Image (cartoon, rainbow, N blue to C red):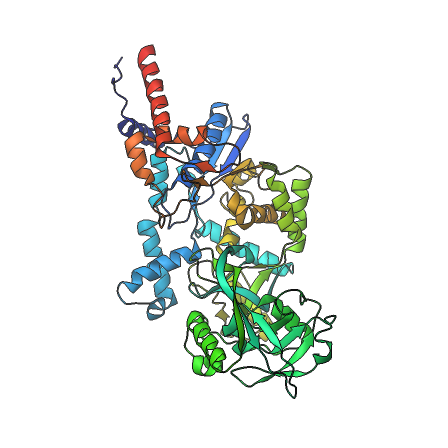
Length: 589
Protein backbone atom coordinates (compact mmCIF):
# COMPACT_ATOMS: atom_id res chain seq x y z
CA UNK A 1 0.00 0.00 0.00
CA UNK A 2 1.37 3.41 -0.98
CA UNK A 3 1.84 5.75 1.96
CA UNK A 4 0.06 9.10 1.66
CA UNK A 5 2.22 12.21 1.54
CA UNK A 6 2.64 13.97 4.84
CA UNK A 7 1.58 17.30 3.37
CA UNK A 8 -1.80 17.70 1.71
CA UNK A 9 -1.47 19.22 -1.79
CA UNK A 10 -5.04 19.98 -2.90
CA UNK A 11 -4.25 21.24 -6.40
CA UNK A 12 -2.37 18.07 -7.33
CA UNK A 13 -4.89 15.73 -5.69
CA UNK A 14 -8.04 17.42 -7.02
CA UNK A 15 -6.91 17.73 -10.63
CA UNK A 16 -5.79 14.09 -10.67
CA UNK A 17 -8.97 12.62 -9.24
CA UNK A 18 -11.45 14.80 -11.11
CA UNK A 19 -9.89 13.68 -14.37
CA UNK A 20 -10.19 10.06 -13.21
CA UNK A 21 -13.83 10.54 -12.21
CA UNK A 22 -14.77 12.08 -15.54
CA UNK A 23 -12.84 9.57 -17.69
CA UNK A 24 -14.50 6.70 -15.85
CA UNK A 25 -17.93 8.35 -16.19
CA UNK A 26 -18.65 8.16 -12.46
CA UNK A 27 -21.09 11.08 -12.76
CA UNK A 28 -23.13 9.55 -15.58
CA UNK A 29 -26.84 9.24 -14.85
CA UNK A 30 -27.85 5.64 -14.25
CA UNK A 31 -31.03 4.18 -15.76
CA UNK A 32 -31.86 1.36 -13.33
CA UNK A 33 -35.62 0.69 -13.25
CA UNK A 34 -35.30 -0.65 -9.70
CA UNK A 35 -33.91 2.64 -8.33
CA UNK A 36 -35.71 5.88 -7.52
CA UNK A 37 -34.79 8.92 -9.62
CA UNK A 38 -33.37 12.28 -8.54
CA UNK A 39 -32.72 15.20 -10.89
CA UNK A 40 -31.26 18.67 -10.64
CA UNK A 41 -30.91 20.95 -13.65
CA UNK A 42 -28.09 23.41 -13.14
CA UNK A 43 -29.02 27.08 -13.58
CA UNK A 44 -27.21 27.62 -16.89
CA UNK A 45 -24.46 30.24 -16.48
CA UNK A 46 -24.00 32.76 -19.28
CA UNK A 47 -21.46 31.81 -21.93
CA UNK A 48 -19.89 35.20 -21.25
CA UNK A 49 -19.32 34.29 -17.62
CA UNK A 50 -16.41 33.15 -15.51
CA UNK A 51 -16.61 31.37 -12.19
CA UNK A 52 -17.35 33.72 -9.29
CA UNK A 53 -18.20 33.21 -5.63
CA UNK A 54 -21.94 33.10 -6.37
CA UNK A 55 -21.34 30.14 -8.69
CA UNK A 56 -19.23 28.48 -6.00
CA UNK A 57 -22.05 28.74 -3.46
CA UNK A 58 -24.76 27.68 -5.91
CA UNK A 59 -22.92 24.66 -7.30
CA UNK A 60 -21.55 23.54 -3.93
CA UNK A 61 -25.13 23.26 -2.62
CA UNK A 62 -26.23 21.33 -5.71
CA UNK A 63 -23.21 19.04 -5.57
CA UNK A 64 -23.86 18.26 -1.91
CA UNK A 65 -27.42 17.20 -2.75
CA UNK A 66 -26.55 15.19 -5.85
CA UNK A 67 -23.66 13.30 -4.18
CA UNK A 68 -25.88 12.48 -1.20
CA UNK A 69 -28.58 11.05 -3.48
CA UNK A 70 -26.03 9.24 -5.64
CA UNK A 71 -24.55 7.53 -2.56
CA UNK A 72 -28.09 6.75 -1.35
CA UNK A 73 -28.72 4.55 -4.41
CA UNK A 74 -30.73 6.87 -6.66
CA UNK A 75 -30.56 7.24 -10.42
CA UNK A 76 -29.11 10.73 -10.27
CA UNK A 77 -28.88 13.30 -13.05
CA UNK A 78 -27.21 16.64 -12.54
CA UNK A 79 -27.71 18.34 -15.89
CA UNK A 80 -25.05 20.87 -16.95
CA UNK A 81 -25.45 23.58 -19.56
CA UNK A 82 -24.93 27.20 -20.54
CA UNK A 83 -27.17 30.07 -21.61
CA UNK A 84 -26.59 32.05 -24.81
CA UNK A 85 -27.20 35.32 -22.90
CA UNK A 86 -28.48 37.34 -25.85
CA UNK A 87 -27.78 40.92 -24.83
CA UNK A 88 -24.61 40.24 -22.85
CA UNK A 89 -22.99 38.07 -25.53
CA UNK A 90 -23.89 40.43 -28.37
CA UNK A 91 -22.41 43.33 -26.41
CA UNK A 92 -19.21 41.35 -25.85
CA UNK A 93 -18.79 40.57 -29.56
CA UNK A 94 -19.67 44.12 -30.62
CA UNK A 95 -16.96 45.46 -28.31
CA UNK A 96 -14.49 43.05 -29.90
CA UNK A 97 -15.50 44.26 -33.37
CA UNK A 98 -15.08 47.87 -32.26
CA UNK A 99 -11.39 47.16 -31.67
CA UNK A 100 -11.13 46.83 -35.48
CA UNK A 101 -13.42 49.86 -36.05
CA UNK A 102 -16.26 47.60 -37.17
CA UNK A 103 -19.93 47.43 -36.21
CA UNK A 104 -22.45 44.63 -36.58
CA UNK A 105 -24.10 46.65 -39.39
CA UNK A 106 -20.81 46.61 -41.29
CA UNK A 107 -20.94 42.80 -41.27
CA UNK A 108 -24.66 42.28 -41.75
CA UNK A 109 -26.81 39.89 -39.74
CA UNK A 110 -25.57 36.54 -41.08
CA UNK A 111 -21.86 37.39 -40.87
CA UNK A 112 -22.31 38.88 -37.41
CA UNK A 113 -24.03 35.71 -36.16
CA UNK A 114 -21.10 33.70 -37.56
CA UNK A 115 -18.75 35.90 -35.51
CA UNK A 116 -20.80 35.30 -32.36
CA UNK A 117 -20.66 31.54 -32.87
CA UNK A 118 -16.89 31.80 -33.38
CA UNK A 119 -16.65 33.73 -30.11
CA UNK A 120 -18.87 31.21 -28.33
CA UNK A 121 -16.83 28.24 -29.57
CA UNK A 122 -13.60 29.91 -28.45
CA UNK A 123 -14.64 31.44 -25.13
CA UNK A 124 -18.06 30.03 -24.27
CA UNK A 125 -16.73 26.92 -22.57
CA UNK A 126 -14.50 28.70 -20.07
CA UNK A 127 -16.97 28.49 -17.22
CA UNK A 128 -17.66 24.77 -17.73
CA UNK A 129 -13.91 24.12 -17.54
CA UNK A 130 -13.83 26.13 -14.34
CA UNK A 131 -16.75 24.16 -12.89
CA UNK A 132 -14.60 21.06 -13.29
CA UNK A 133 -11.91 22.81 -11.25
CA UNK A 134 -14.54 23.32 -8.57
CA UNK A 135 -15.19 19.56 -8.50
CA UNK A 136 -18.82 19.69 -9.65
CA UNK A 137 -20.01 16.11 -10.29
CA UNK A 138 -22.08 16.92 -13.36
CA UNK A 139 -23.04 14.46 -16.08
CA UNK A 140 -20.97 16.16 -18.78
CA UNK A 141 -22.17 13.75 -21.47
CA UNK A 142 -25.55 15.48 -21.27
CA UNK A 143 -24.27 19.08 -21.41
CA UNK A 144 -26.69 21.40 -23.19
CA UNK A 145 -26.70 24.93 -24.60
CA UNK A 146 -29.84 27.06 -24.94
CA UNK A 147 -29.18 27.44 -28.68
CA UNK A 148 -28.24 23.87 -29.52
CA UNK A 149 -30.51 22.06 -31.95
CA UNK A 150 -32.74 20.33 -29.40
CA UNK A 151 -33.31 23.39 -27.24
CA UNK A 152 -33.90 25.55 -30.32
CA UNK A 153 -36.53 23.12 -31.59
CA UNK A 154 -38.29 23.30 -28.21
CA UNK A 155 -38.28 27.10 -28.35
CA UNK A 156 -39.90 27.12 -31.80
CA UNK A 157 -42.46 24.51 -30.78
CA UNK A 158 -43.38 26.48 -27.67
CA UNK A 159 -43.73 29.79 -29.52
CA UNK A 160 -45.99 28.27 -32.18
CA UNK A 161 -48.11 26.48 -29.58
CA UNK A 162 -48.54 29.61 -27.44
CA UNK A 163 -49.43 31.63 -30.55
CA UNK A 164 -51.95 29.08 -31.81
CA UNK A 165 -53.51 28.97 -28.33
CA UNK A 166 -53.97 32.73 -28.42
CA UNK A 167 -51.38 33.40 -25.72
CA UNK A 168 -48.86 35.29 -27.89
CA UNK A 169 -49.76 38.52 -29.63
CA UNK A 170 -48.21 41.58 -31.21
CA UNK A 171 -49.02 45.05 -30.05
CA UNK A 172 -47.79 48.62 -29.97
CA UNK A 173 -47.23 49.40 -26.33
CA UNK A 174 -45.11 51.44 -24.01
CA UNK A 175 -41.99 49.40 -23.29
CA UNK A 176 -38.79 49.83 -21.31
CA UNK A 177 -36.15 50.68 -23.88
CA UNK A 178 -32.39 50.42 -23.32
CA UNK A 179 -30.68 52.99 -25.56
CA UNK A 180 -27.31 51.29 -25.11
CA UNK A 181 -28.41 47.72 -25.89
CA UNK A 182 -30.92 48.96 -28.46
CA UNK A 183 -33.72 46.71 -27.33
CA UNK A 184 -36.90 46.48 -25.28
CA UNK A 185 -36.71 45.04 -21.77
CA UNK A 186 -39.34 43.33 -19.64
CA UNK A 187 -40.48 45.14 -16.48
CA UNK A 188 -38.44 42.84 -14.27
CA UNK A 189 -35.28 43.47 -16.29
CA UNK A 190 -35.25 47.06 -15.09
CA UNK A 191 -33.39 47.73 -11.85
CA UNK A 192 -34.49 50.83 -9.95
CA UNK A 193 -32.14 52.84 -7.79
CA UNK A 194 -32.45 56.19 -6.01
CA UNK A 195 -30.80 59.17 -7.68
CA UNK A 196 -30.28 62.69 -6.46
CA UNK A 197 -32.06 65.00 -8.85
CA UNK A 198 -34.26 68.07 -9.04
CA UNK A 199 -37.87 69.11 -9.40
CA UNK A 200 -38.22 71.92 -11.89
CA UNK A 201 -41.27 74.22 -11.54
CA UNK A 202 -42.11 75.63 -14.97
CA UNK A 203 -44.66 78.28 -15.92
CA UNK A 204 -47.02 77.19 -18.67
CA UNK A 205 -48.96 80.27 -19.97
CA UNK A 206 -52.71 79.72 -20.38
CA UNK A 207 -54.07 80.97 -23.68
CA UNK A 208 -56.17 84.16 -23.35
CA UNK A 209 -55.57 84.32 -19.58
CA UNK A 210 -53.27 85.96 -17.04
CA UNK A 211 -53.51 83.04 -14.58
CA UNK A 212 -50.15 81.60 -13.53
CA UNK A 213 -50.09 77.87 -14.21
CA UNK A 214 -47.05 75.99 -12.88
CA UNK A 215 -46.03 72.44 -13.81
CA UNK A 216 -43.54 70.50 -11.67
CA UNK A 217 -41.40 67.88 -13.41
CA UNK A 218 -38.25 65.82 -12.89
CA UNK A 219 -37.62 65.64 -16.65
CA UNK A 220 -37.81 69.10 -18.23
CA UNK A 221 -36.19 67.91 -21.48
CA UNK A 222 -39.30 65.85 -22.32
CA UNK A 223 -41.57 68.91 -22.32
CA UNK A 224 -40.77 69.34 -26.02
CA UNK A 225 -42.98 66.25 -26.50
CA UNK A 226 -45.85 67.38 -24.23
CA UNK A 227 -49.27 67.03 -25.84
CA UNK A 228 -51.38 67.97 -22.82
CA UNK A 229 -51.46 69.09 -19.20
CA UNK A 230 -53.52 67.22 -16.58
CA UNK A 231 -55.20 68.21 -13.32
CA UNK A 232 -57.47 66.35 -10.94
CA UNK A 233 -61.17 67.02 -11.70
CA UNK A 234 -61.78 67.58 -7.97
CA UNK A 235 -59.02 70.17 -7.57
CA UNK A 236 -60.80 73.46 -6.82
CA UNK A 237 -57.73 75.45 -7.89
CA UNK A 238 -58.00 74.37 -11.50
CA UNK A 239 -61.64 73.39 -12.12
CA UNK A 240 -62.33 76.46 -14.23
CA UNK A 241 -59.28 75.81 -16.41
CA UNK A 242 -60.25 72.35 -17.63
CA UNK A 243 -60.73 72.41 -21.39
CA UNK A 244 -58.61 75.53 -21.92
CA UNK A 245 -55.33 75.52 -23.84
CA UNK A 246 -51.82 76.21 -22.59
CA UNK A 247 -48.99 77.52 -24.73
CA UNK A 248 -46.04 75.16 -24.40
CA UNK A 249 -42.90 77.11 -23.44
CA UNK A 250 -40.01 77.10 -25.95
CA UNK A 251 -42.18 75.64 -28.73
CA UNK A 252 -45.31 77.82 -28.83
CA UNK A 253 -47.53 74.79 -29.45
CA UNK A 254 -50.99 74.82 -27.91
CA UNK A 255 -51.96 71.77 -25.83
CA UNK A 256 -55.17 71.11 -23.83
CA UNK A 257 -55.75 71.04 -20.08
CA UNK A 258 -57.47 67.74 -19.28
CA UNK A 259 -58.97 66.31 -16.08
CA UNK A 260 -58.05 62.85 -14.81
CA UNK A 261 -58.41 61.15 -11.42
CA UNK A 262 -54.85 59.81 -11.72
CA UNK A 263 -53.39 63.22 -10.85
CA UNK A 264 -52.34 63.54 -7.20
CA UNK A 265 -53.52 66.96 -5.98
CA UNK A 266 -50.96 66.91 -3.14
CA UNK A 267 -47.89 66.17 -5.26
CA UNK A 268 -45.91 69.07 -6.66
CA UNK A 269 -48.27 71.74 -7.91
CA UNK A 270 -51.11 69.32 -8.66
CA UNK A 271 -50.47 69.86 -12.37
CA UNK A 272 -48.85 67.11 -14.48
CA UNK A 273 -47.35 67.56 -17.92
CA UNK A 274 -48.47 64.85 -20.33
CA UNK A 275 -45.80 63.24 -22.54
CA UNK A 276 -47.63 60.10 -23.76
CA UNK A 277 -44.73 58.88 -25.91
CA UNK A 278 -42.24 58.77 -23.03
CA UNK A 279 -44.02 57.90 -19.80
CA UNK A 280 -46.17 54.80 -19.15
CA UNK A 281 -48.67 56.65 -16.94
CA UNK A 282 -48.95 59.51 -19.44
CA UNK A 283 -49.45 56.92 -22.17
CA UNK A 284 -52.46 55.39 -20.40
CA UNK A 285 -53.95 58.82 -19.60
CA UNK A 286 -53.28 59.94 -23.14
CA UNK A 287 -55.24 56.98 -24.53
CA UNK A 288 -58.21 57.90 -22.32
CA UNK A 289 -58.19 61.49 -23.57
CA UNK A 290 -57.04 60.97 -27.17
CA UNK A 291 -53.85 62.96 -26.70
CA UNK A 292 -51.33 63.02 -29.52
CA UNK A 293 -48.34 60.69 -29.14
CA UNK A 294 -45.23 62.64 -30.08
CA UNK A 295 -41.94 60.74 -29.96
CA UNK A 296 -38.98 63.10 -29.48
CA UNK A 297 -36.15 60.56 -29.00
CA UNK A 298 -34.12 58.46 -31.41
CA UNK A 299 -33.55 54.79 -30.50
CA UNK A 300 -30.23 55.74 -28.88
CA UNK A 301 -32.01 58.38 -26.74
CA UNK A 302 -30.94 61.52 -28.57
CA UNK A 303 -33.31 64.34 -29.44
CA UNK A 304 -34.81 63.80 -32.88
CA UNK A 305 -35.89 66.10 -35.73
CA UNK A 306 -39.10 67.18 -33.96
CA UNK A 307 -37.10 68.98 -31.26
CA UNK A 308 -35.74 71.85 -33.34
CA UNK A 309 -32.54 73.36 -31.95
CA UNK A 310 -32.09 70.47 -29.53
CA UNK A 311 -31.83 67.84 -32.29
CA UNK A 312 -28.86 65.50 -31.84
CA UNK A 313 -28.39 66.23 -28.14
CA UNK A 314 -28.32 63.45 -25.56
CA UNK A 315 -30.95 63.48 -22.82
CA UNK A 316 -28.45 65.01 -20.43
CA UNK A 317 -27.32 67.70 -22.87
CA UNK A 318 -30.93 68.54 -23.75
CA UNK A 319 -31.86 68.89 -20.07
CA UNK A 320 -29.11 71.46 -19.51
CA UNK A 321 -30.05 73.38 -22.67
CA UNK A 322 -33.82 73.32 -21.99
CA UNK A 323 -33.38 74.49 -18.39
CA UNK A 324 -31.08 77.31 -19.53
CA UNK A 325 -33.60 78.44 -22.16
CA UNK A 326 -36.49 78.30 -19.68
CA UNK A 327 -34.54 80.47 -17.24
CA UNK A 328 -33.50 82.93 -19.93
CA UNK A 329 -37.04 83.29 -21.23
CA UNK A 330 -38.57 83.66 -17.76
CA UNK A 331 -40.48 80.39 -17.62
CA UNK A 332 -38.62 78.85 -14.66
CA UNK A 333 -40.27 79.58 -11.31
CA UNK A 334 -37.95 77.56 -9.05
CA UNK A 335 -35.77 74.46 -8.80
CA UNK A 336 -35.87 72.10 -5.80
CA UNK A 337 -33.66 69.18 -4.81
CA UNK A 338 -35.55 65.94 -5.28
CA UNK A 339 -34.62 62.26 -4.96
CA UNK A 340 -36.41 59.83 -7.22
CA UNK A 341 -36.02 56.24 -8.37
CA UNK A 342 -34.60 55.81 -11.85
CA UNK A 343 -34.78 52.60 -13.86
CA UNK A 344 -31.62 51.14 -15.36
CA UNK A 345 -30.91 48.23 -17.70
CA UNK A 346 -30.03 45.10 -15.71
CA UNK A 347 -27.26 44.33 -18.21
CA UNK A 348 -25.49 47.65 -18.80
CA UNK A 349 -26.99 50.01 -16.16
CA UNK A 350 -27.96 52.57 -18.81
CA UNK A 351 -30.99 54.63 -17.79
CA UNK A 352 -33.95 53.14 -19.61
CA UNK A 353 -36.34 55.22 -21.70
CA UNK A 354 -40.06 54.55 -21.98
CA UNK A 355 -40.83 54.15 -25.67
CA UNK A 356 -43.78 53.25 -27.87
CA UNK A 357 -42.83 50.19 -29.84
CA UNK A 358 -44.36 47.25 -31.69
CA UNK A 359 -43.44 44.15 -29.67
CA UNK A 360 -44.40 40.53 -29.06
CA UNK A 361 -46.04 39.62 -25.77
CA UNK A 362 -47.15 36.53 -23.85
CA UNK A 363 -50.50 36.78 -22.06
CA UNK A 364 -49.68 35.90 -18.49
CA UNK A 365 -52.98 35.79 -16.59
CA UNK A 366 -53.91 32.12 -17.11
CA UNK A 367 -50.29 30.93 -16.93
CA UNK A 368 -49.76 32.84 -13.68
CA UNK A 369 -52.96 31.41 -12.18
CA UNK A 370 -51.68 27.84 -12.63
CA UNK A 371 -48.24 28.77 -11.26
CA UNK A 372 -49.85 30.28 -8.17
CA UNK A 373 -52.02 27.24 -7.53
CA UNK A 374 -49.15 24.73 -7.38
CA UNK A 375 -47.35 26.77 -4.70
CA UNK A 376 -50.57 27.46 -2.79
CA UNK A 377 -51.33 23.73 -2.57
CA UNK A 378 -47.74 22.70 -1.77
CA UNK A 379 -46.92 20.81 -4.98
CA UNK A 380 -43.98 23.20 -5.41
CA UNK A 381 -42.28 24.12 -2.14
CA UNK A 382 -40.21 27.30 -1.96
CA UNK A 383 -37.51 27.49 0.70
CA UNK A 384 -37.12 29.64 2.71
CA UNK A 385 -40.90 29.83 2.97
CA UNK A 386 -40.91 33.63 3.36
CA UNK A 387 -40.20 33.91 -0.38
CA UNK A 388 -43.63 32.49 -1.13
CA UNK A 389 -45.21 35.87 -0.32
CA UNK A 390 -42.91 37.58 -2.78
CA UNK A 391 -43.75 34.95 -5.41
CA UNK A 392 -47.49 35.41 -4.81
CA UNK A 393 -47.29 39.19 -4.96
CA UNK A 394 -45.51 39.18 -8.30
CA UNK A 395 -47.83 36.66 -9.93
CA UNK A 396 -51.00 38.24 -8.54
CA UNK A 397 -50.01 41.60 -10.05
CA UNK A 398 -48.35 40.31 -13.19
CA UNK A 399 -48.36 42.15 -16.50
CA UNK A 400 -48.03 40.58 -19.94
CA UNK A 401 -44.46 39.55 -20.74
CA UNK A 402 -42.64 41.42 -23.52
CA UNK A 403 -40.63 38.62 -25.16
CA UNK A 404 -39.17 40.36 -28.24
CA UNK A 405 -35.69 41.85 -28.31
CA UNK A 406 -34.23 44.06 -31.02
CA UNK A 407 -30.88 42.29 -31.23
CA UNK A 408 -29.45 39.64 -33.58
CA UNK A 409 -28.01 36.98 -31.26
CA UNK A 410 -30.72 34.67 -30.00
CA UNK A 411 -33.67 32.59 -31.14
CA UNK A 412 -35.15 34.47 -34.08
CA UNK A 413 -38.90 34.70 -33.72
CA UNK A 414 -40.52 32.09 -36.02
CA UNK A 415 -42.93 34.50 -37.67
CA UNK A 416 -43.04 35.46 -41.35
CA UNK A 417 -44.64 38.30 -43.31
CA UNK A 418 -46.10 38.34 -46.80
CA UNK A 419 -45.94 41.40 -49.06
CA UNK A 420 -49.30 42.57 -47.67
CA UNK A 421 -47.93 42.11 -44.13
CA UNK A 422 -50.04 38.99 -43.55
CA UNK A 423 -48.49 37.04 -40.67
CA UNK A 424 -47.58 33.34 -40.69
CA UNK A 425 -46.22 31.69 -37.53
CA UNK A 426 -44.41 28.45 -38.28
CA UNK A 427 -41.63 26.18 -36.98
CA UNK A 428 -39.63 26.38 -40.22
CA UNK A 429 -39.26 28.26 -43.50
CA UNK A 430 -40.91 25.31 -45.25
CA UNK A 431 -43.93 25.31 -42.94
CA UNK A 432 -44.34 29.07 -43.42
CA UNK A 433 -44.11 28.70 -47.20
CA UNK A 434 -46.80 26.00 -47.12
CA UNK A 435 -49.10 28.26 -45.07
CA UNK A 436 -48.48 31.13 -47.49
CA UNK A 437 -49.22 28.91 -50.51
CA UNK A 438 -52.54 27.88 -48.96
CA UNK A 439 -53.36 31.51 -48.14
CA UNK A 440 -52.36 33.20 -51.41
CA UNK A 441 -52.86 30.29 -53.80
CA UNK A 442 -49.35 30.78 -55.18
CA UNK A 443 -45.73 30.90 -54.05
CA UNK A 444 -44.75 34.23 -52.53
CA UNK A 445 -41.62 35.64 -50.97
CA UNK A 446 -41.75 35.80 -47.17
CA UNK A 447 -39.68 37.90 -44.80
CA UNK A 448 -38.91 36.52 -41.34
CA UNK A 449 -39.35 38.64 -38.22
CA UNK A 450 -36.04 40.32 -37.38
CA UNK A 451 -36.54 40.35 -33.58
CA UNK A 452 -35.24 37.55 -31.38
CA UNK A 453 -36.78 36.11 -28.24
CA UNK A 454 -35.94 37.23 -24.74
CA UNK A 455 -33.20 34.99 -23.35
CA UNK A 456 -35.48 34.08 -20.43
CA UNK A 457 -37.97 32.54 -22.89
CA UNK A 458 -35.61 29.67 -23.73
CA UNK A 459 -34.45 29.44 -20.10
CA UNK A 460 -38.07 28.97 -19.02
CA UNK A 461 -38.11 25.67 -20.93
CA UNK A 462 -34.84 24.41 -19.43
CA UNK A 463 -36.17 21.58 -17.16
CA UNK A 464 -37.70 19.76 -20.15
CA UNK A 465 -36.04 21.15 -23.29
CA UNK A 466 -32.74 19.69 -22.04
CA UNK A 467 -34.17 16.20 -21.71
CA UNK A 468 -35.36 15.70 -25.29
CA UNK A 469 -38.67 15.31 -27.09
CA UNK A 470 -41.68 13.41 -25.69
CA UNK A 471 -40.94 9.70 -25.76
CA UNK A 472 -37.28 10.21 -24.90
CA UNK A 473 -36.20 7.94 -22.03
CA UNK A 474 -34.39 10.76 -20.22
CA UNK A 475 -37.53 12.92 -20.29
CA UNK A 476 -39.74 10.09 -19.05
CA UNK A 477 -37.34 9.17 -16.24
CA UNK A 478 -36.03 12.52 -15.06
CA UNK A 479 -38.98 14.91 -15.54
CA UNK A 480 -40.31 16.39 -13.37
CA UNK A 481 -37.00 17.24 -11.74
CA UNK A 482 -36.69 17.25 -7.97
CA UNK A 483 -34.79 20.25 -6.67
CA UNK A 484 -33.91 23.63 -8.11
CA UNK A 485 -31.11 25.55 -6.40
CA UNK A 486 -30.80 29.17 -7.43
CA UNK A 487 -30.51 32.74 -6.23
CA UNK A 488 -33.55 34.56 -4.92
CA UNK A 489 -32.78 37.42 -7.32
CA UNK A 490 -34.10 35.41 -10.29
CA UNK A 491 -37.28 34.15 -8.64
CA UNK A 492 -39.30 36.15 -11.21
CA UNK A 493 -36.94 36.08 -14.20
CA UNK A 494 -36.60 32.34 -14.21
CA UNK A 495 -38.22 30.27 -11.45
CA UNK A 496 -41.83 31.46 -11.88
CA UNK A 497 -41.59 31.24 -15.67
CA UNK A 498 -40.28 27.67 -15.51
CA UNK A 499 -43.26 26.75 -13.34
CA UNK A 500 -45.64 28.34 -15.86
CA UNK A 501 -44.09 26.73 -18.93
CA UNK A 502 -43.64 23.33 -17.28
CA UNK A 503 -47.32 23.13 -16.37
CA UNK A 504 -48.41 24.51 -19.76
CA UNK A 505 -46.28 22.20 -21.92
CA UNK A 506 -45.72 19.09 -19.79
CA UNK A 507 -48.91 19.26 -17.66
CA UNK A 508 -46.66 18.70 -14.65
CA UNK A 509 -44.67 20.91 -12.32
CA UNK A 510 -40.99 21.22 -13.37
CA UNK A 511 -39.59 20.60 -9.86
CA UNK A 512 -40.79 19.79 -6.36
CA UNK A 513 -38.48 21.97 -4.28
CA UNK A 514 -36.98 25.41 -4.91
CA UNK A 515 -34.07 26.26 -2.64
CA UNK A 516 -33.25 29.97 -2.81
CA UNK A 517 -29.87 30.99 -1.46
CA UNK A 518 -28.66 34.49 -0.76
CA UNK A 519 -26.09 36.70 -2.43
CA UNK A 520 -22.39 36.39 -1.65
CA UNK A 521 -21.25 39.74 -0.26
CA UNK A 522 -17.96 41.08 1.06
CA UNK A 523 -17.18 41.62 4.74
CA UNK A 524 -18.85 45.05 4.61
CA UNK A 525 -22.05 43.60 3.20
CA UNK A 526 -21.49 45.02 -0.29
CA UNK A 527 -22.44 43.05 -3.39
CA UNK A 528 -19.30 41.81 -5.09
CA UNK A 529 -18.33 43.56 -8.31
CA UNK A 530 -15.25 44.23 -10.41
CA UNK A 531 -15.82 47.98 -10.19
CA UNK A 532 -15.57 47.88 -6.38
CA UNK A 533 -12.55 45.61 -6.54
CA UNK A 534 -14.05 43.33 -3.88
CA UNK A 535 -14.62 40.27 -6.09
CA UNK A 536 -11.86 37.70 -5.56
CA UNK A 537 -10.35 35.62 -8.36
CA UNK A 538 -12.03 32.29 -7.65
CA UNK A 539 -9.52 30.19 -9.58
CA UNK A 540 -6.68 31.84 -7.71
CA UNK A 541 -8.38 30.89 -4.44
CA UNK A 542 -8.75 27.29 -5.64
CA UNK A 543 -5.05 27.22 -6.55
CA UNK A 544 -4.12 28.53 -3.12
CA UNK A 545 -6.51 26.64 -0.83
CA UNK A 546 -8.07 23.86 -2.91
CA UNK A 547 -11.64 23.44 -4.12
CA UNK A 548 -12.67 21.29 -1.15
CA UNK A 549 -11.65 23.98 1.32
CA UNK A 550 -13.63 26.66 -0.52
CA UNK A 551 -16.70 24.45 -1.00
CA UNK A 552 -16.75 23.43 2.65
CA UNK A 553 -16.30 27.05 3.75
CA UNK A 554 -19.20 28.29 1.62
CA UNK A 555 -21.56 25.55 2.81
CA UNK A 556 -20.51 25.86 6.45
CA UNK A 557 -21.07 29.63 6.49
CA UNK A 558 -24.42 29.59 4.68
CA UNK A 559 -27.69 29.93 6.59
CA UNK A 560 -30.85 29.02 4.73
CA UNK A 561 -31.73 31.86 2.37
CA UNK A 562 -29.41 34.38 4.02
CA UNK A 563 -26.74 36.39 2.23
CA UNK A 564 -23.21 35.14 2.78
CA UNK A 565 -20.55 37.58 3.97
CA UNK A 566 -17.36 36.24 2.47
CA UNK A 567 -13.82 36.74 3.73
CA UNK A 568 -10.70 34.98 2.57
CA UNK A 569 -9.88 34.40 6.23
CA UNK A 570 -12.83 32.03 6.38
CA UNK A 571 -11.21 29.72 3.83
CA UNK A 572 -8.37 29.08 6.24
CA UNK A 573 -10.91 27.27 8.41
CA UNK A 574 -11.92 25.16 5.41
CA UNK A 575 -8.29 24.43 4.56
CA UNK A 576 -7.58 23.36 8.15
CA UNK A 577 -10.58 21.03 8.06
CA UNK A 578 -9.35 19.49 4.78
CA UNK A 579 -5.92 18.97 6.31
CA UNK A 580 -7.49 17.18 9.27
CA UNK A 581 -9.42 14.85 6.95
CA UNK A 582 -6.16 14.16 5.11
CA UNK A 583 -4.31 13.40 8.32
CA UNK A 584 -7.10 11.11 9.53
CA UNK A 585 -6.82 9.25 6.21
CA UNK A 586 -3.06 8.91 6.68
CA UNK A 587 -3.64 7.58 10.19
CA UNK A 588 -6.13 4.90 9.20
CA UNK A 589 -3.95 3.71 6.30
